[in-house]
Image (cartoon, rainbow, N blue to C red; front, side):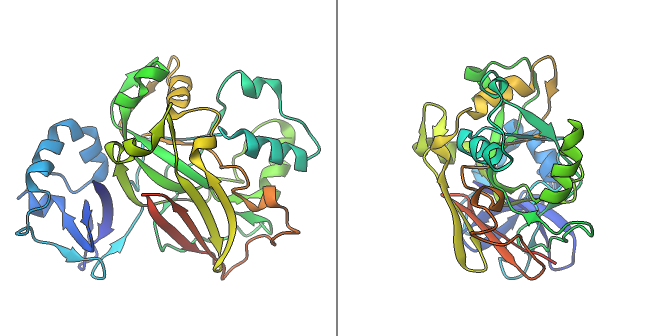
Length: 302
């Protein structure tokens, strides 16, 4: 299933799923049995999925064409957003650029920071470069959506707590980020202005064919103004989502609607490539992130 949140032709925000180029409004299709909020659906998805399975594929369902609606972030109001740094290549490249080496503690545990759950952007939505930023960057990531409440979850049990997956672009104001992190806090203002996700949340069972040892064989690509800049594969990740969920839930409760970001794939941002390969992002630039089976997430900088 490809779950979406969208603005219908009347400008109302609704939730549903994609069937080809058809967008199904789950509340209308179920005659009110399903909610019009993706967060509410995720909170009770174990009950609601049986209703959707009975409806999905029916040729008689009312629908919108994809051209009639506008997709938003598939989960526009997550409960929390934790973003990890789980790719070793990314960490090595980033520290090398700043003249440092990877901290040995990185190999002891998955590291994350909290970002702004109220600044989620959807596919096609414009992203404003912060006024004080001249070094704007994209970050090519995969994210999982938590679907069940849990605390002190073990890595080998984490699959039961995942609802689905989506593409994530952790936009970064590198000049703001680097300055604030000199005081050993953050990132904060370098990150909290926008995070893009979408175009849909793919149910977790759809990625099973790509899975080996907790890692997915998924090609990841970033394109800027039609030029491929970043290429990687999710199977190269050092820490699995199971590892990340175990760390995030240590002595803390995770809730349905929490987002866990993987961190940037190796060479998945301009900071790693270097401005000698491509300049920092500027207004007018169009950034497309693509991941196998998860579609394309496109945004324009303003």
